[in-house]
Image 1 (tube, rainbow, N blue to C red):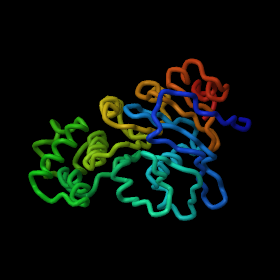
Image 2 (cartoon, rainbow, N blue to C red; image 1 turned 60 degrees about the horizontal axis):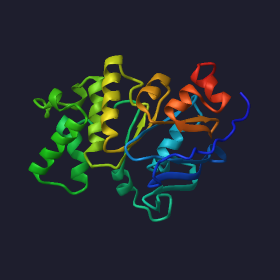
Image 3 (spheres, rainbow, N blue to C red; image 1 turned 180 degrees about the vertical axis):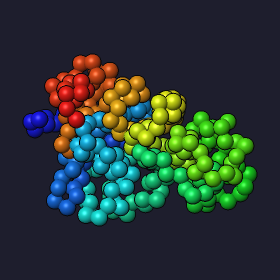
Length: 264
């Protein structure tokens, strides 16, 4: 493939409360993400697609500064949330990650009970009363469409759950601290089709109260659940638009070829 043509985000009816501006991410001298500006609207799902190694997961991790944990990683540009640049010195990263939750590709429940997995975050942030914690645990599990399946086994190990249940538990754990934004890094890639369907339905429900950004290699999944799609290639943003437009009438030939499976 030739060099990517960097897209300018289309004029969309999205608010500016959460967006990146000329964001670049380096590992040493290697520029993994190249000057990307993207908006993320309330009550929408934005899918990040592109071949392996194109920078989409690196970009996703930057949105709650998880790249800070990677030695040699540096960031240039801005990530704006409610008028505040989270890359500015002095940002409270713990509070930031309370506001912006993240769920990884592989389910990673704590080696604790189902109850304690959900209660961990609220306890960390100062909630100690049993009644309050009970309410948070139930509410979070309900929001993750898992309560009815586990309500009689809350003291059981989370590791006893199926893979799909574990992933929904991880989503419930992220929801337990009332985030405004949820980042999902291929959350269904390790799941069977039935569990994948449940996670996708959950994402559709959660967007009614959250902004959601998801990395996925599954083109059908992106088409099913997202409102906007951003196509990445070699660290650049090639195209960004409403999902229906990207999948049916993309502006860039590279986008068309990727979606049709001609490379990647």
